[in-house]
Amino acid sequence: MSKPVEDNLNKIPIVNWIVKLGKSIKIPGLEGMSLYDILEMYVLGIVKGALTSRAGGISFSFFMALFPFLLFILTLIPYVPIDGFQHDFLFMIEQLLPPNTASSVEEVIADIANNRYGGLLSFGFVASIFLMTNGVNAILGGFEYSYHITEMRNILRQYFIAMAMAFFLSFILVITVAVAIYFEIFINDLKANGWLENDVFWIEKGRFLLFILLLFVSVSFLYKYGTKETKRYSFFSPGTVLTTLLTILNFKLFAIYVLKFSTYNKLYGSIGTLLVLMLFVWLNSIILLLGFELNASINSLKKKHIKYNNS
Image (cartoon, rainbow, N blue to C red; front, side):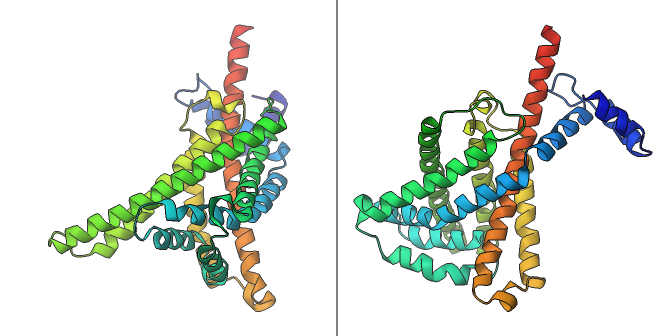
């Protein structure tokens, strides 16, 4: 797409062959654009978009919003007419945390669960909404500072959109936990009737599939309405698929790292758990931005292609 870059790459042995191969592969549905065009635009966005700095800002705000988010959900639990909802919700949160960190934050979670702080009109609940919104707002800000994004919302409008998105994401999580509870009841009924033997296997697989669905829909929602430009594009996107796959891979590899190689607890004691958790959030913030950059790169190429054809 950029002739100077392409000329420099053609001077490098083997790389020039890869460039030629990439240009010969046309991506279906992208109006004849090649794989090389997308990869060049994608790498350009990553290099010039200060990806790690944006991920740092997102991870800090997201980490600060984590426990207020728990307070927000747990305050609403008494209004959810499902037996065992709190237990299953806390179990899901612990499963989403890296190994050896759930026990360290269990005391904080237990305190949030056991203290309602006066219900829906309490200061703690209102503050949790504010901090939870800040976490989503940081994600939207990270999207808008992409190299390929040119249109931005005003600060006040973006904050209210972030608040609405935070409520919607909370609603999705509540629905997912409710479905998980009823799915477990359904599997137990099948076992009681003699139609299943290994109910634990099916419950674990069902929860895993629900987690993937929760992740996929949540990321699609963030990418779709995260910026003023992207709301015009499809809800499901290549960036969502990339983010979902990389997030699952990150969960698996990070669990191995913590269990086999991490020495944070030996070096820093109990505070090492927080360092592990912050590193985990930072890596997932990078993955979230990588998926968004892929969508932004494809959309930018489409706009350039349309502009070129109309000129």
